[in-house]
Image 1 (cartoon, each protein chain N blue to C red):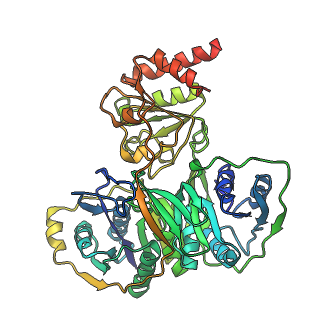
Image 2 (cartoon, rainbow over the protein chains, first blue to last red):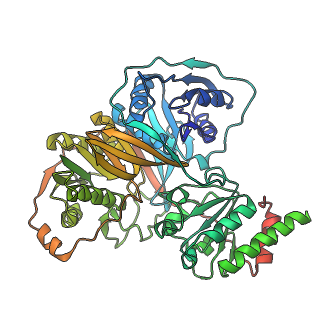
Image 3 (cartoon, rainbow over the protein chains, first blue to last red):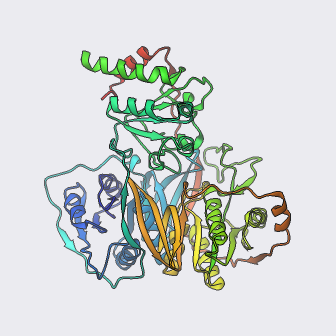
Length: 311
Length: 246
């Protein structure tokens, strides 16, 4: 199990993938990439982690996908399954390991039914494929939203340092550009307010952001809103954006294209607010309100705040 | 330098697909094929590099059935110089596609492979990095900015929470994300011209040593449809009762 990475540091998604890994067998957690020591410290506290394997990078073995794939293929003989979260780190690395081992990975696994059987969504979530694993070590990336995170415990798993091979030709990391977004992360937020092309008439995402801030939630967007320049691409939810699973998702001015719906199916409660009664999002929403979002969203924010005060 | 652009054909993603429980295949009646949207972005990037005088030739390649010739003709009309169809009538797993692309890249002595970050049909998202692994070339996936600067690829990758800046020694494999560019439409004169551009068809040898098998496709778990609320106040009350308010 590969520890996940967020902008070169530990990621909370690791605990979700560990939960998937413990369905298969004993889990060793590989803490690699930049700030691997921090990833190891966080990982050794996750329930179900047997041992943490620490990669101490140096100039002789810098953190890169190419180096890590080379390292993992050398360790692969000791394992029956090699897993990672399906995020920008794992989805980059696991297929490269697959190229080296000549095994096709199974990506975006959303359920593990048996040691050699899992499922994954296809066609933007319009169908589910049941896959039987034939070659081992099997290479899997798991959808973090499909697995509840393993608990954090007091007992500490041992940390063992991994011996490293010679480095290979790699892309050179030049730095991260973190998103200016100060709100909670889409992947972890309990509440998400998302906007679609219904916001285009206002030429701004202000109505979405205001409601998100009132609820302490994250801001999300449809591909249409991103393409229209209303929101940055890292806020995109859907088949080719982020897959989210908040307790509450509120869609403002979102029609509900198949590709967007693929990203919100695991949400606890879905709310649609759209003046168009025929918008497909109404059909999958738990609560749908046919109304002008520019009028309804601020009033909803106020009504919710009033209820909180009244409690 | 030559650039290889890998393209696959997918059913029109705007058209819904239907699947019955236990089906062996997904039914897509009357759905025409289009170039996978992400691969179209890769093609546009390659054509742009050629227009800037940074690459000499753009070669489009597909690994698929004979009917994909149509998508390759479209690629030629958009601006690829020539096309290669590595023909197979079997449904291949990504490893076979990646091996075929890697072999093609070596034979054509290309300095760069561009392709989409994922096919929008099966959503594997693995062909680019698998091909890079087979070749031992550096890679960048989900790239939203790309330039060739003094013999290096300068890229920005889309990662959770922002972007990663990478400098890639060439040859390299780059998988393209949305935001990199807006693909052009093929003009009528260019569609006519594409008819006389070279399109080579080679038969891909059969291979069978599957990593996995797809047992069947089933319908996704459906959410039960909810209820209409009449007012903002009713909505707030319902959400409060559901216990999802922060």
